[in-house]
Length: 332
Ligand code: MTE
Image (tube, rainbow, N blue to C red; front, side, top):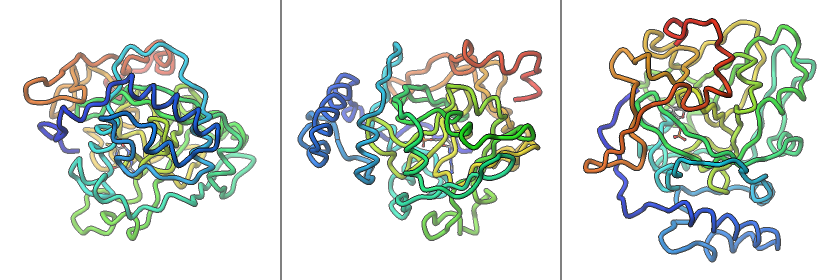
């Protein structure tokens, strides 16, 4: 992965959290009254680019997102503004610069979308996203996202617990891991056809089954109260907040219950640098840089906003038990 020295976002574009909160309340009111179109423009406060990042989606999805259970817990971190979340991305299927996904992901067609559920489960098959979402509860979850490149954001996702979905397919006792695959289609994801690409497409990720069933593990369909923009992994992406960001695979088309630990894109490409577990750990450095601190976006030359990295990205109370007795230097 590449480390960029600074982001390219102007400080003037920052959206205060209060503006987002007000906008969300507004959306709930107007959407409840059936005024879908009004939500994108009329309710936006000055300074909030309501439709930056081209977050589009069908009405049924917008309605479901508007009805999501609000985040009830206390959030102490300041939210990263929408403009930063949707313009500073890693999505190598669209290029290697942080600004490439927002510029080039317009070719992705996230609706309609099918997801295949496969492997060691009583029920398998291909399902429309709409049908899968009909059986789960959408919630807003504010999570820190810590990239292995040592930058981080705080994002209000809208999604559902992965475990809630997985249980419906009745995994068998042979299901020890869950493997995820991104869409493979170079017409929609042009970098997959590049001769210079170093990733063996499609992008793949995986979790141990107990990690997948942990209530923190989310499948997201939206952020900031809107459908996921393409650059953030529309229409369905994983969010595993205690792990480095590369585990949070985007634009998922397949979820498979496996008996063996699945191959994952970065681990296969550079196993000495990117482990299967990829738990955020300030004590285990990347071979080429320290993981003790991180650059919390927005950050700039004169306000780099460097903070200490927390063990398990601050989620140790919820997940440390999953790794009891394991040598985290070996299983990085
Ligand atoms: N998923 C796919 N399919 N392709 C990718 O290149 N990049 C990963 C992850 N998911 C990636 C992906 C990396 S390295 C990070 S840090 C996060 O997505 C970034 O998510 P964001 O762009 O929404 O911040």
